[in-house]
Image 1 (tube, rainbow, N blue to C red):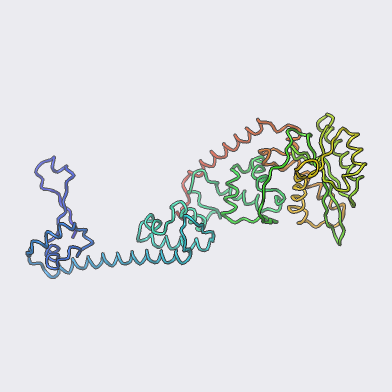
Image 2 (spheres, rainbow, N blue to C red):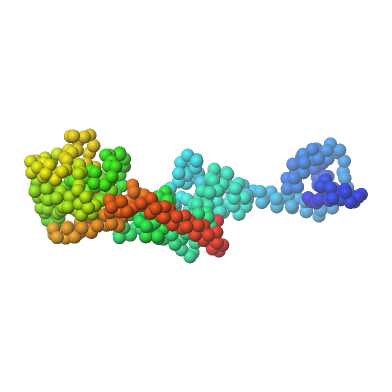
Length: 439
């Protein structure tokens, strides 16, 4: 038996001394001397040199009872049985992990939640006999990854969200539910994630970084109502330095009903992304182009109370490259720039507006008549101008930027509100966790 005894009490200083030695029963010494096996009793953790000394002496320490010898070997067998169970548990863990994911966790990610659940279950079963750190080191998984997987899989009973205990600055359960509503609701399906990020701040509902949005969307595998996934190639196009410096005009085709084709023509300001004017027409011609430009100039003059002296970028199509449009532009103190002809830039800004209009909104609506299309286009352009904050303006809406009402003070106030929300989140997350926390 592994009994510890102190040195004799010669003085108070010796009693307080940290020097200690371990004593062993004569039965243990006698059995090791007889068998000459210095590792006979691994549960006692006898130093090898000490056991070798007993073997070298080759003498019987005392005659031991059979009962005492059986007691020593019984403890040894219990220890070995326990060690065997530990080895079996570790072997089951390794077999489960390598069967599910035969790669290194540092170089390849495991995205399948079902496989993650199997690994977490195996780790928790093995940790009943081993330390958690020993289990994680044996399979090469970090402790932070284990906690993240465990909290994603074994959710709290109160809400379907990750456990609030993980990090102090992590989003609370209420904030995660708000983010899910923003991402998955059809009400916001026509708004991009970067704009939803600022919309949550402008409405005061959710303050967090854009990276946090993408992290939770990946983590919970939220799907946008009408998402289309394809590889994006980002190129920086032509950029204006102030409002009303450069406009873009273009027309797009919309199929309505039984083979009926309608057209939407719009003018957008390059600097603010503000849609100055738009029309729904039944054909493409120079007359409609002139009318759209006239509406845009009239609105710009009304809003800014100044004469417009803008460049108008357009495609070299039949509705743009003609004498009627050129005469109107010359008479209204405007100048024409043909995309891919006069300059190497394309007319991508207004094309991107039409792409968002159709793919994020119109394709998911039932448009039956021209009046119906006008109402839906009017709704989208109003949302674009007055409701949706843009990442390129750091949370500013196109109308605010066009009127120069989105100032640095507004941006600082938004940042201060974000900081206050972070502090409130930290305070809530540092509260005692729920009793069903998986970590």
